[in-house]
Length: 445
View (cartoon, rainbow, N blue to C red):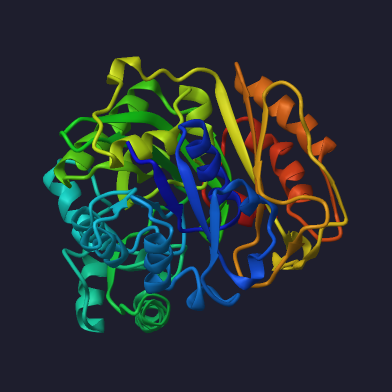
């Protein structure tokens, strides 16, 4: 087992990793930018090093500076968290070449699954349904129109690299296809330095269901059941829950088995998430793999009782999975609400500023993962996540009642937050009945 780990991230997830390491008796080295200098969570690390100015491109994305901090800090492993370099195969490869363990999947599997076209090929070989579409990248308008007319409009143009909704356009006819192809390709080039796009059938009003998996270096894979992430806007998740409500047991079992098959076929190890779209007939289609720990991992932790960060560390150290699939339970219902420093009434514009008052909810069934405190300043440099409010109760109605109480207790002053919108969403009849899809928020609000 590792004795010393560098945490190559910031904020909430950095604190989460530091806490997991402390429970395991592992020392931690934190890194920070000038914008995060003095953050309270850094005091919990055994050492902390500044790696550059506020801009992520000059600090948290600088591989050479992070490796230098790892060497100075005399660590054996690096945990990338999520975002920044977490799914950067080159970073994982550099860690390996420096004899520093990367707490994540092998760089080969990350490269394979990081390209969505390649990932579709792996899924097809593993007999996992993919959304009908092009056999690979589309290079010109003529080829794109041929594919679109073969599978039928509407279609979705998707970047082969990256995520977060960038490089995606819906086309409902040949004219919008031509315009969307150019726009998606240009956005993909700007965002991911990869202009490649492909085409797949656009599924109207689907659910977004993902499966958490754990895999060791010895070929053993288990799933930790599924999460429903359909409550989102512009492909950014707002609320996640496990298990997915109103999903037939047979579909739950089949989608989880499909995720395990694909994981094995890709030669994947460590933690990861296999993502699917589920249509209105409960037919599911593979869309991508997130080769890292997810923001929403706490809901899976609460229903299974498994600490995913600690499991990541054990797996990266070469240990075998200490559980069988039959032993992975799914008890109760967990729901997570992301609390962001954004103004929902002003097109979700970011709301940087100082938190002048903070009252965090508590009591049975409530967990709040966050690094902020009263007097903490939310800057303009990084994502707007303040923290994650998670509840866990025996049934979904009980979980929703607990969540309503928690959101009513929650007070954050000095900045705008998404708490008011979260209250509206969880009190909407469609959400209460579990009748939601990925367009629910944008159709309703």
